[in-house]
Structure formats: C-alpha cells, structure tokens
Image (cartoon, rainbow, N blue to C red):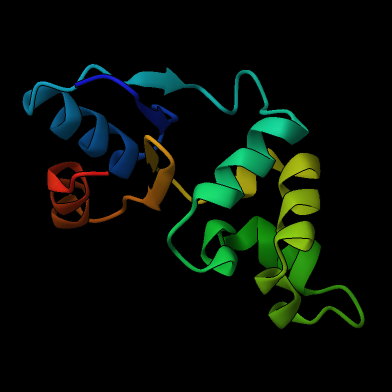
Length: 125
C-alpha cells in the first residue's frame, strides 16, 4: 500500500508503535520527521484539511503548552477548534503537533491507539 504518511519522531513511543504497525501490515509509509524538518504552512494546511479528528486534538497539551500557551492572560482553549489558530500555533511551535498523525489518501487521523490505526488502514478511502 502506498499513499500513506506518518508524522513521526523517534522519541515518541506512540510514533514508534504506529510506524511498526504500519510496516508489519505491509505499508511502507513516507516518514515525515516533523521536528527535524518543520512542516511549512502548506503542509500543515493540507494536514488540517484532511484531519478527521477535532482540530483542537492536533495540539498537544503537554507541559510546554501549559507553561507557554495556556498560561498566557486571556488564552481561551476553545480557540484551538479554529484551524487557523491551530495552524499558527503549529507553525510557531512544531513540537505541539499531536503524534503520530497518519495520512492515507485525503484523510488523516491522530493514531495514538493501535486499534484506531488498524481500523483506519482497513477502510477504503
């Protein structure tokens, strides 16, 4: 199967598990090392347009997010539902991309659970 990509960082156990699952099911994905080569605006716009999950789910709510974004006066977490807000955050802070993101054709998911990845790959998209 071709036309599959994974946004990946080797430091993430969910990414490693996702990539291994893809490979064991016969998929040779394009591996996008998004922290080594930060995605540009067009790439992220395309990703957000393909995302099945709620837009706000693409933003990691880690300690960096809490300390540098959520702690700002007037920050409203509901604004993360807006793809434009999510896009600007990811352009400025690529590390906030929730991972792994699996893209197949014109659809993308956040593949944190192996069952979700398996079901996604089995779908005819």
